[in-house]
Length: 83
Image (cartoon, rainbow, N blue to C red; front, side, top):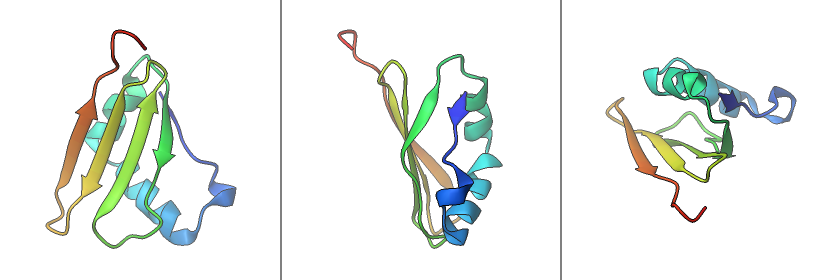
């Protein structure tokens, strides 16, 4: 599950960037994950690179970047066993 930022506190560009991310398979996968994912940071602009960084309740982190080519990339850091 993803805890999305409150839209009332977002700029129109940030809302557009989050809406674009919501349509990805990666966002759908995190929504289906039994862990809760919270945004650490999100794009304030729609201009690439657009980055979304999330952390799970077990301290795993994932960063999604929309490159200028239109491709989303992902970098993942799994939760440590000591977390």
